[in-house]
Length: 276
Image (cartoon, rainbow, N blue to C red; front, side, top):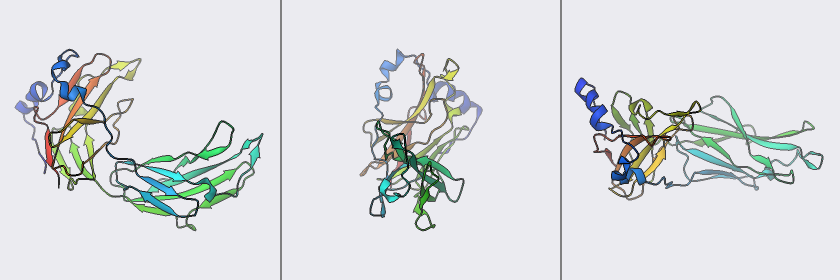
């Protein structure tokens, strides 16, 4: 179910008047619902656990547009353990790629206050459209010792599920691909050109943000960030509550210096979608 809105001169003019409301900080008092909504996380991040007995398991579901946490037991790679000046001189990293693409790496160890290595779970972002997460691990130390944990060279492969995707384009059209299912995610792709107001800067750095607000069956509003510290888009997934039948979305830009605020809410009706 989706709404597809065409472009015409009247629509474009109305967008500046009715669809997007620019408000002062004082005026926000009368719009308490979106202004006071809290940011709430309704689902835990899935975890890939690599345990000391050599097995691995998934706690949760790997889904595109979400992160996954990699929790690695350091005893799985125990051969390279050189010391230097009373501290550990070795480290373990996870190497990973999506669908056979470029290889990336993160540390899964860190030195504690005594300069001994402890676990440091790594966070991997799973992009939309990605289907296969491939992992392997490597330990190395200052003597040149090297060891791999790679399922005998085959590497660890995990299937990434695809969420429904709600896309909000700069031309004021919207679409949803895939069924919106309770207990799963709804990825939100939002073109920030839809909310050009309130683009403030401070010391040359963007001082504005865009959030998606959502609620189920007319219940309490929740929100997630759609932009990062520099105004760049960040992945956002709405966790669809179990037992819900309808989700509403709307969007807000906020100038963090002046309190300037504008909304994209389909003329106040919000963007409403049925949940399968």
